[in-house]
Length: 429
Image (cartoon, rainbow, N blue to C red; front, top):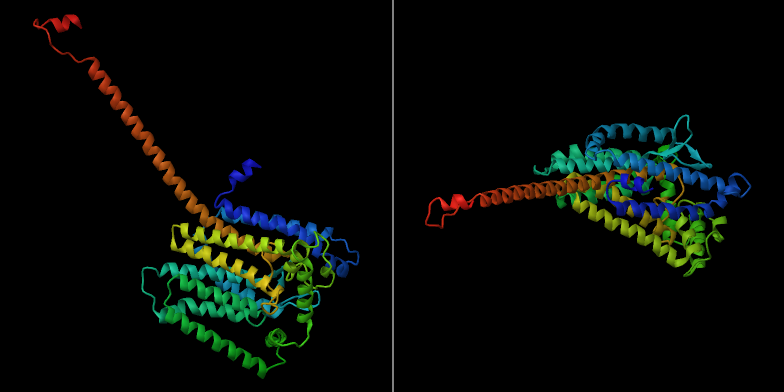
C-alpha cells in the first residue's frame, strides 16, 4: 500500500478528498438503491447495485491513475482535434438517443457491444473547456480582437451548445456560464463578454420561439419539460417534479440534526431518483444536518484545493485547465444540493463522485486525472529545483573541502627562517 501511494504523483490533498468522497458514496448508494432493486428485480436485494457501484469507482480511479501519468499539455492539441469528433457524437445522440427505464433520455447513447450508456454532453464539456483554455493561453501575448475571437473561439462554443441544448438545457446553461467564467479569468475583455452573453440570450429566445412554432417536432420535445419545471418551481401547480421535491424535503426534514442512521431512510422507497439526482436528500435523512454539511464541506475544500493548484501551475494553460475542469465539478455539486432543498428547479444534475452511474463517475475521474497531471508537473518542477539546489550545495562542499586540503598542505610545507644560521631552518625541518 505504501508503495502504491508513493507511485501516486501530483497533489496528495486532491487525491485524499476524492478518495473520501468515493468511500462515503458506498453507504448512501447501497441504501438508496433499494427502490431500484424492487422496481427492477422485485427482490429488494441491493447487493448487486453496490457491487456495480464498486466496479464503477474502481474503474474511475484507474482512469485517474492512467490520465495523471499523461503530460497535461498533450490535451492542448487533443482538444482541437477532439472538438469535431464531439460534434459528431452529439449529433448522433440527438438522432439516436436511447431510452432509459422508459424515460426520454435523448442525451444518452449506448456503447455498442458492452451495453454501457454514455452521456456525450459530459465529454463535450470537458473538451470544450480545454479548447477555451488553449485559445486563451495562445492569445496571451497577442491583443484579442472581437472579430478574430468570434471565429476562433465563440463559433466552436456555440456549435457545441447548439447540439446540447435541445436535449439538456441545464447542462447547456452550466457549460455556457462556466465558459464565461473561464474567459473572464483569462482576461478576455468584459465588453466582449457582455456582447456574447446578450447574444446567448437572444439565441435561446429564438430557439424557444421555434419550439412554440413547431411543438410536435422531436427536436423541440424537451422545451415543454423546461417550461413545466420552471412553472412548477414558481407556482403551486402540482406535477411529477413537485412529487420528487416534496419527497426530498420530507427526507431532509426527517433527518434533523443527527439523521435516522445508515440504511434507515424511508423516503428512498418513494423518491424515483434516490440514488442519483436526489441522493443528497437521502444523505441528509440518514446522516442528518451534520452529514449534509460534511459533504458540502468536502466539496468546498476540494474547490479551495483547486484554487491553490491553479495558483501554483507554472503555465497559463495549466491554470485555466484546473479552473475549467475543477470549478464546473463543484458547481454541479452545488446545483444538485440546491435542487434537493428547492432552491433551484429540477435539473437532472448528479452529485459528482457520490451519485450512482458509470459514465458520470468516469468523466469526473477523467477531469480529475487531468487536474492532477497539472499539479504533477508543478511538483516535478519543484523537485527539479530542489535537486538542483542539492547538487549545487554538494559541489560547493566538495570545492570547500579541496581548498581546505590544499591550504593544509601548503601550511605543512611552509619554511620560516627565524634563526641566524641560514641552514638552521632546513636542519630543524
